[in-house]
Amino acid sequence: MASWLPETLFEIVGQGPAPSKDYYQLLLTRSQVIFRWWKISLRSEYRSTKPGEVRETHEDFLENSHLQVQIALIFGARILDYVFNLCEGKFDFLERLSDHLLLSIISYLDLEDIARLSQTSRRFAKLCMSDKLWEQIVQSTCDTITPDMRALAEDMGWRKMFFTNKLQLQRQLRKRKQKYGSQREKQL
Image 1 (spheres, helix red, strand yellow):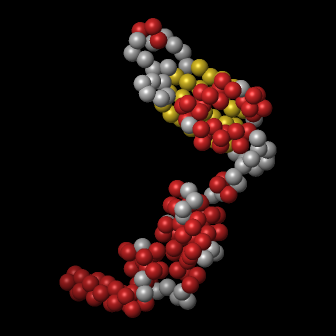
Image 2: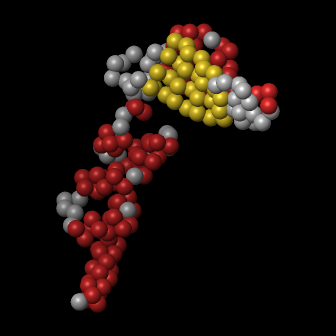
Image 3: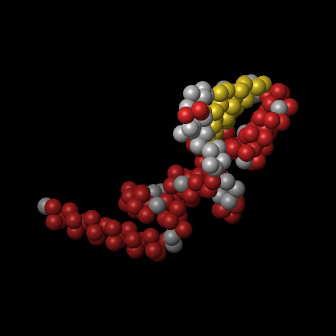
């Protein structure tokens, strides 16, 4: 595995399928798969049950069909597939990049590509709609951004400002100046 990866590769917690109230944790480190459970029951015979834990190496986990079935039942087949890929060394390195770095990369994409990327995952949808991204895009397309334009963008949002035509922006800037100019006169 790549040495720059964090010690904890993946972690998920959840409750067992109904009617169970049991609590489960799946933790994947660089070298182990750790599965923990806490039995929660109102029945007196289960109250003294202690939490349990299974630790397996990645190789042993890939052979342990019983543990795989438990994980699939509790967390779903998609999580099991994801954990399988991690144990086999198949990482989604793009998904591991920081938001700041991804925003820098996304800001170089065409608008159509940004729209397509936003449909690939919740994380990318959030990043593609973020004000930080659209601020970078506006700054790269505009020669200068005046303090009035910056204040308007912070009020209305950088994305909306980017897609608003110039005439509408000029009208909104005039209205904003009039509004704040009349408020300042009242204060004096």
